[in-house]
Image (cartoon, rainbow, N blue to C red; front, side, top):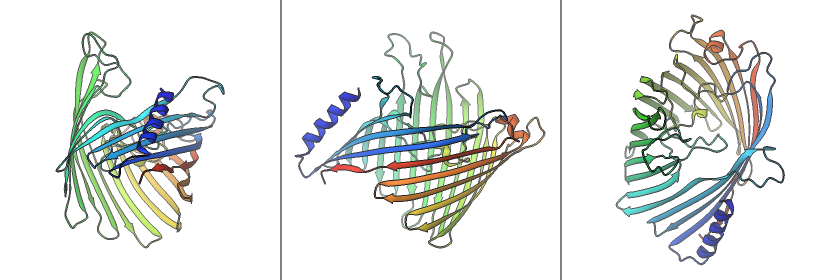
Length: 402
């Protein structure tokens, strides 16, 4: 497949090299390499467990085409993996398509986008790119939309099957859902920094076995609010879930969040926030962004989760940004320990632009857990838990007809 995609891309490049003025062809590349020292990230470690070190990488090549503002295409192939994962002369390929879609624009703000695509909405809490992950998120879907002035409305439809079944519609494939229907609406107030979004999602999960399976449905509805006057950045969200999840359990859950940021001057900024999750499934968001970068709470926490956040950022130079965040975590309901406190996490991150299209990032995190953390998430809280990483991202545009 990899050779076929490269051949296709070269053919498109040759054709569009003589494209008319109303056509545009672009080629973008990304090489991202990240080394990690894991001494308790993801899951807290026990006292006898040793730290791990590894390097992962992403190589992505994206081809874009646009004609007359009525047709847009994107084809993106990527290779992901760990250094040393394959033999040096292995002939198997880990290349995959992370985007392959066509967007038809019908005028008056209407469009249809069909194929493998990223679904990124609002603050990425429910639907996001999950760009931190080496592969990222993608969906095979049909997106129908209307966008005009202050109004945007999208309808997303998806249906997954592992094989072309001759009989029945049982789905036992790798995607986390069988079918999805999502309606999203966004209003951006004219002349003001106020944005309001509404979302309603119906998600179908397959349960049982082939021949005896049944599709169970989970509904999520909610709103996302943003207000950015002057130096302030105010954000809030509320979501409610009902129905049945993939584990065939009845769900009645909700989550709420509020965050306020203030830019003191061009150099310093501060922010604070609070999250409350009561048995809520985060679905397909970019979870790494919200609940501490050690990623202890990317999955559902049966006892619920409270997250108190405070942070500061500093632009020490034109191209350097330093960020320091503090999280206090607690459950919503008492654990078997009789307490709610899970502990304290500190996250530090530095980002600097080395040159055009080249960014270097590094971070360090540590968690000071409690006995409740051991009971809810695992590990041993008296063992030192920390995590460090460094990432180099090279992301140039290689070619453009305009």
